[in-house]
Length: 425
Ligand SMILES: [Zn+2]
Image (tube, rainbow, N blue to C red; front, side, top):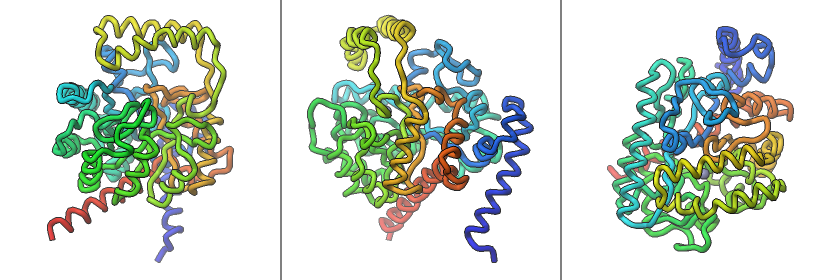
């Protein structure tokens, strides 16, 4: 009988050989890359990005066709489409059903729920339009199966629990539509709990309704995502959840002290909980860099308009105008961004604190992510190259690229089965 490690190694070699054939068969990857060790590893492992904000981009740019390729960095190209996903060897992504937050009222909840359902519709439509290239995945097994078919896997993650309103049934409703994680809050406190970036706290952690949402997510087998939540909310969740949790896009506070990142005590708590922290590639969370003061001033001048947009007080034309102004500022005074290597420093730190089994990648593309040398999904192989250069082994790279996240997802599903069995007995 083969030992576990030997079996795993054999599986890996078989996957490598299969990947080699695949690399040569693809026209969009050059033959020189096929001889490159990083490219071979990148093709062999399941690669999952746990946070891509395409739907909110789509809501302001309905003409965008994710089935078409777009040039990296070109105006309106965004950072994700199916062509670049394939070119970048990205097998799967959690597409973010993100809704901007307005008042905590039934009307506000209902509007957000409508938008969330629309975003799920758009994502489903994509799989109808391009059935040979992409499909919705509901389980890790689905993702591995789609990888073997050479199709992209799309998971749904909900960012901001705001559309749930105050009806616990809504969790099941969105689960039934395919949502497999919920980021409890976004940048403001909501009806579930406190956010890491609001002016003051509302609940001192989770709200009573937020507590019932955690129980319901555990029962259904949805991953609880603690990115964006206040530290008090984080600890409240850790004390309450029966399943491992994820941070779908967060980095290390030890290297960049912002509330959106996680300090070492929180990282160790995630390790103990069995969960995973997915490195976020958003410049401000990675490294503090002095920007051109003229850029800062121009952006500050738009802050009121931006707040009005988030409150829902701008017309479509005003939103379009605001976005044009952002584009103009970015063109005139481009943001000075940290590099991919700066981000991988965070990953190194997280591995040093938590070990290799609790880290992954959540780019936040189309939601603020993007650094020098990792500007969109087509450049994902650069991550593998950087990891290899730093001495990570192929098996460690496999864990970082999705192995860990899929393990956690399977554990969350197992906990749900246990809880449902207990409830029936
Ligand atoms: Zn976010």
